[in-house]
Image (cartoon, rainbow, N blue to C red; front, side, top):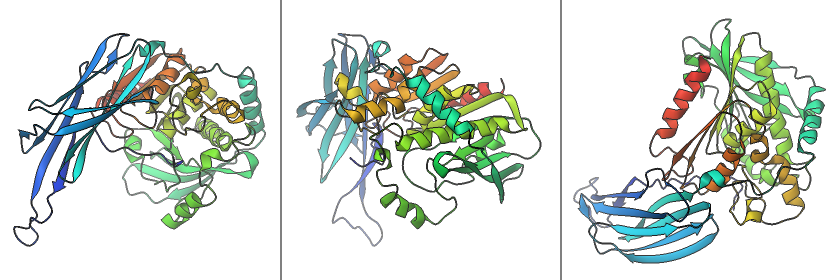
Length: 431
């Protein structure tokens, strides 16, 4: 599996346009049939109690007419690992698949309906007794002392912030390129976007999803226009504002499979520098004279969601953690016969498993004391639902989770996550 996240775009409610080869009524006028698909679990949020039966109904229509008589096949994965395969024939009303569990855990359903020379794909999920799902392992006995030592190590390195103005294209918002010192001679680099003026402002730290890519100084303009002072940092020690080839070369060279770099030891793991860069960036925001001293939010998606949990657990001044489809949760889940979340490095006991326990978002989530919002999808095939619930259940802070049964890794199929996030951030901004 590639170390870069697979972004699954097969939303359960999708519209596919399938080209029918050889039909050309006139030059430039190609004929298409509109194919619509939908799937729905029997319980709206996909959450069931032990021994309750879950059922999914799905339909496929072409130009408003149900496609009856078409075969379909499905794969059902218990805890993301145990596959159950089956198939059937659709009626005019669609298809029906059922499942149940006698214990806590997840089920993910993938349905393929062949049509012409293609296939229509449905993905949905369900979870039983999610509130009882526990992390696969306890935190290491010296987890806190290890990270206390790393933070003390970082504190001995002056941050020496360097700010370089970036041209603004938005009235009332100013931008800066920011550089901070980190361990081992590395740098933390990112872009600061803030309202023009002396403040004070609520602060937000935005952390990036997985991969090696260019970040844009203007991504956080909407948040800055709402009054936030936002620092968006790159996950890696790399130059900003370069041509795409620069990042592509890093991705295929020095930073290829970066999640595995140094994984033989907690002292050399690539994630050590990454986690400390988040701590340093949060500390920098709080050191600014234009911070209001009231609100510091960390937010991110996927890898960024996992890093948000980590930062909130490490840095005590964080007031709100907004973790969307968080990765890096319950990385030793395979030891409990569950599929782990990205980066999916641990598939059995051994030195690697021991290393990754120190970089498992679950163990940082236990330390969070601020307000916590997590949004996730039961159709997520990169960060399985049981890993997210393992982290959520480990938190003892004020918390809320938003569950979407058909949400894949990416997107927001119902819009519930976006609404919850807007409410959460506004409450933080006005605290």
